[in-house]
Image (cartoon, rainbow, N blue to C red; front, top):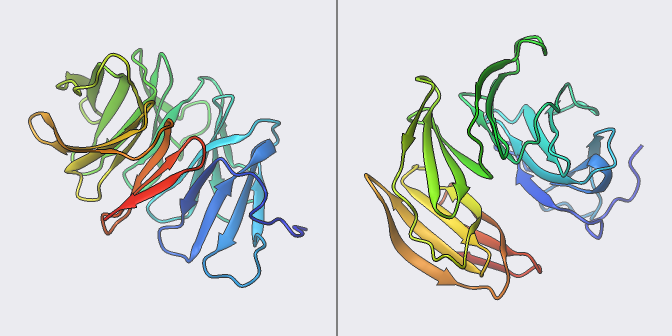
Amino acid sequence: MLEKVKHSEPSFTIAAHPHLSIYITGATKGRLYFWKFEHENDCALDYSAINSAYNIRKLKLNSYGDKIAVNDTEGNLYIFDINSKAPVLNFNKYKILDYAFVNEGSIICATGIEDLVVYDTLMPIRKCEIVKEKVGGQMLLYLHDKNQVLLFNSQEEVKLYDIRMHKFFNQPLFNYSPSSFITSVALSGEENIIITGDNVGAVKIWDIGSTFSLRESLVGFEEEVKQVVVTPNNMLYALGSKGKFIYKS
């Protein structure tokens, strides 16, 4: 039974449910806490947990909101059903750094330092790895309309991977200075804008076309940008490593 877990508990990542008035936080020791928006009692509604001593570093929901993909600080990837107390799948062969649900949520594309992997979660665990490429990255973005993935390897290289064709395409470079590197990326709902945050506190807005062109640069931090988020109504939120928070409409 969950008792009196409040917002004072440390959290390392957060995600809102796409359809319900709840959000989920990733905390210490592999725990996920479920919260209700505008709830009078500042206590978590419920929790799920990984049998792990590691903290949660990322969590994402599929478009239906019935599956949660969770990444811990050791690089393991877990899949939860929304009502399950424990993960229903565990991928620990590669050290995963980022991932995205593909199609409506049964396919997951994941990247580590050296590998790009596509999993079919409906397949038996021994056969669910359907694609593996020996090219890795630190972050990825899934382009739903094109069924493609943007893979960010460093401040100097971005690769475009077509999931259907199993093929990489070179993309134009982001114009980043040698002293800075990208720490967080987000994609607008229309998939025509990319937001990047970097290690020197800049948040940049890029137009996607035949090239990545810089639309605007926001210098809102004196610290590393930990996370950038674009909401469905195109609000931009950014979180710094020391807790500073900014937003832009």
